[in-house]
Image 1 (cartoon, rainbow, N blue to C red):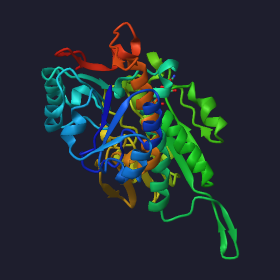
Image 2: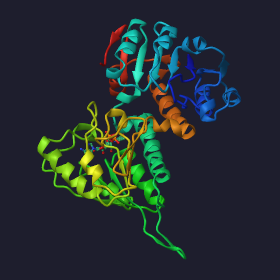
Image 3: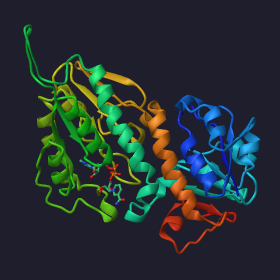
Image 4: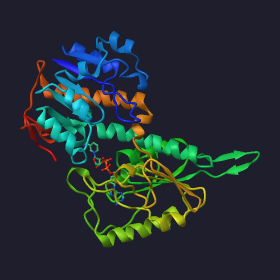
Length: 367
Ligand code: NAD
């Protein structure tokens, strides 16, 4: 079975689906791996490293897309789908609802396409969990972005030139990205507090040395699978007022709140931003799904009343070496899960395969 790894073509995508180390493991498992020349260059994995790991280097995208299984980071483009072999498989990370045309052309081409964005968050699937690995990178980078944007230091310093108090950081949404943001801000010496609608995270927040801000939610905020549910209007109103109070004396806010399949909830209104200290920084990690802050503009920096609001897109791609390394581990675990003795086994009785398979045998299975 031949595995193809193309160079990513989406704008600002520096990651690669397999790194030399994982290529070596797949080759040892009996798979043939073809990597497009320069595929890992932007993530600091040179062609020679892939060659030494046992991959074949190919010069044109057509040669990789002709493989039995194509491994990608981003959804393929229309031109890339056209290069796929009929009956081949493709694994990437995308929301089918946001890629309707691509999904239709994958089905028309009879490609068996899997999206790891749909992976169930079950223990068995943890080694394949790209959402967690990439959210970890994003949570870390969000704090670094805030630290380089803020005009202040994070740690408390006692110097001959005076004493500097530590930065006060608030993390809204304490899932995978939020917990990593808390840990990173703590390592930089900030005083950190966090809020989430799921009461279960209180213990995790506190175990990282942060304070958990308690709001009486008064309704079930946790859905199946450990995800958050959309709050009722009344509870959301109370949440907005609660957050507006807490952001007033905060230097940095990192927001990560998400509800699967829905627009990100607004947690910080424009009025709440106006109530913050000049020089404060908000990093809105939910910018891609609409933003947690009312004034966020995806991909740009907004200034309101002296507060800087950043809405970065695709943060994992800005740390491509480790993001690719973790992604490669995840996607190769998935690949080994869907193959037996060198052939693809699409067994819809298996929850992981059933939930991630977007197209198969000409049919669209997830919309
Ligand atoms: P996510 O990206 O869907 O959301 C981020 C956080 O935002 C969540 O903690 C959520 O509760 C919070 N949130 C949503 N609405 C909010 C609001 N109005 N106000 C404040 N916070 C709000 O979450 P995630 O990081 O993908 O994690 C989701 C769940 O999956 C968690 O329970 C996590 O522990 C679980 N998980 C399980 C596994 C596993 O394999 N068992 C792996 C990874 C994550």
